[in-house]
Image (tube, rainbow over all chains, first blue to last red; front, side, top):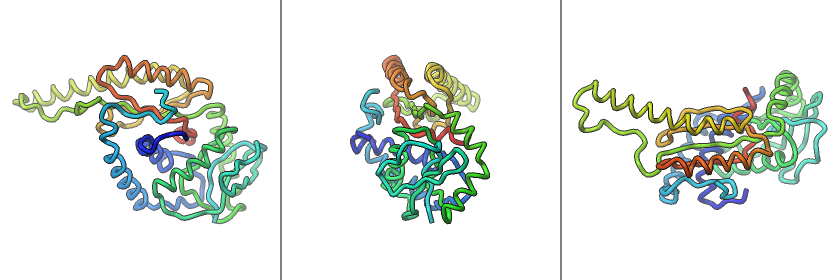
Length: 67
Length: 210
C-alpha cells in the first residue's frame, strides 16, 4: 500500500471492521477475545481523533489518491 | 499452532515471500497458513496480517479468513476446511475476479444529525424535525448507493456510525475498480456538503460469508 501515515490511520477503521468483523470463519479458535477487540477499537478511536484535523476538510482516500 | 490467512484455489501461483507461508491442499482448495505469532491485536499486527493477505490477493482469488483464526496443526486445518468444502468453494466462486471497496460518506463540516432544535416546542415538533432529517439521510444514501451498486457485483450496506451518513462495501470486478472510483469522485463533486472516503481494494472480507 502506497499511503501516507495519516491515510493508513483513516483506513484503519475499514481495516478493523473487515479483519475483526468479516472474513471466512472456519472451525478452530478465534483467539481474539472480546476484550482484545474492544482494546483495538479504543486504540482506533485514539488514532482517529489524532487525524481529525487532517480530515476536517474532507475524508482522505486510501487508494492512490485517485478519489 | 498455525494461523489461517486465506482459502484459495489449488493449484495456485507460487506463494509470495512475505511470511513463512504454507498451503494445505483440500480437494481443489488450498488453505494458506503460517506458524501462529503473537495473539495481540494491535493496529500494527492487523496491518501485518493484511499485508500478507494483500500479497496473496495480488495474483489469485481468495476468501480472507477472520483475523485470529488459529488451529492446532495442518491436519486440524484440513479437517476444518473439509467440513465446509462445498460452501467455501461456492463462496470463492462468488468473489472470483473481484475485490472489495469501502465507501463511507459524512457531512462535510456540519454535524450530521441535528440535536433537539431550540424551536422544537413540543414532542411532536421534535419528531417532525427528526423525521425530516432521517428522510434527508435516506435520500443521500440512495443517491450514493444506487450508481455504485450499478457498477458492482454485490454490495453490503452497513449501519453508519456517526458522523457518517452512509457506509457500504462493494464487490467490484478488478477491471471495474477504476470506473468505480471515478464514479465516487463524480459523486463527491456533485454532492455539495458531503465528504467521501473510499478505501481499497480490499480482499473480499465482507463477502466471504454471504
